[in-house]
Length: 95
Image (cartoon, rainbow, N blue to C red; front, side, top):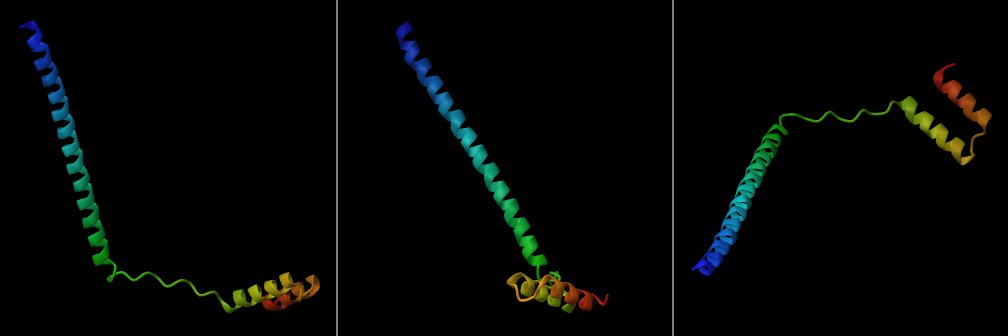
């Protein structure tokens, strides 16, 4: 009779462990679903707000910045010497 209890005890321990593992897995699955639902709700809220709020247009560079970039490109290409580049910058800035 003593031998009979061990297999039953072992089955109870294994079954109890499996039950707890399944219960834990189910709890984690529910938590994951809740997080996904919350995230979907937040995304939906943001999508509804998006048409109402226009993103500001990127700032247009001033013509002075464009001209300076062109001068710098010409200087890097070797079209303008250092002195010519300095003179063109001074003329651009009015100094």
